[in-house]
Image (cartoon, rainbow, N blue to C red; front, top):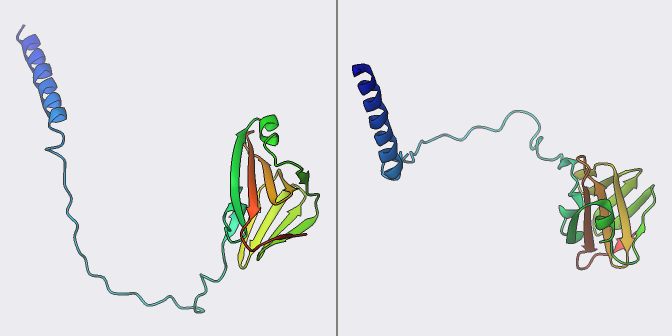
Length: 166
């Protein structure tokens, strides 16, 4: 009998401690003060000066056309079933057949098969396949099927002072 009394007492005391901790959780929060630690500057690693920063950015990016607002400005973004997304294409949009190259400001967009490449200066991005570029009066549209089966449509307008040249 004593054994059950001790077990019941331990449960009641434990529950009281947990409830008291929960009610007073703001009072017992651990506060960490910032500490100033002096550090001496390190010399630049040996090698050519600026060797790591001159390469530009590279990689796969479904949103690559949105990266360069100096060239194109995204005006809309639609996701969903294929029929719904293609219904959001701008009026008069026609697909751009590969191989093709477009110059928008100082950006170059290359359509090669199902992939689209975007270049500006030292930066190089690839819009992963399957991707399709459409041209409409005053805009470009990018349709892409995502890896999970979703569909993505992004509509762009040339930025002020830029035009699209085939």
